[in-house]
Image (cartoon, rainbow, N blue to C red; front, side, top):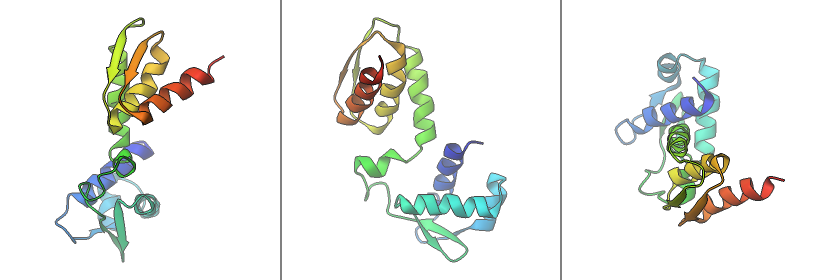
Amino acid sequence: MGAADRLDLTLRLVQGQDPGQRVSVVELAQRLGVSEMTVRRDLDALERQGLVRRVHGGAVAGRSRVEGGGFEARQAWQAATKDRLGAAVAGLVEPGSRVLLDAGTTTVHVAEHLAARGPLTVAVLSLQAALRLADRVLGDP
């Protein structure tokens, strides 16, 4: 299991608990099949993003996704899953197509993968997706 998938699963396990209920490092290590030290590092990374709160021996859910509903807060939520979706969606687009991307955190991943499918005409409703496309297109020689 890759680090991004492990972080996604860790976050889901912590946020799946009743409010205020702690998930222990030992339990997470057993469920994920990794060392306790790896779980601690992952929980530290999730805490830096404001997604969980570390407590003695484990973690509890941080602010809910509704409370921290801004783009930056939602961007890290299930990033590996969104990236897989982005790759699958981009794979359906034929070169020479015209595409409209709505706003959202998943569409940023679609945009990243579309950049390799060109030539395309892409209209975007998301500044973040536009920046990802511009970075990839403008960065090419």
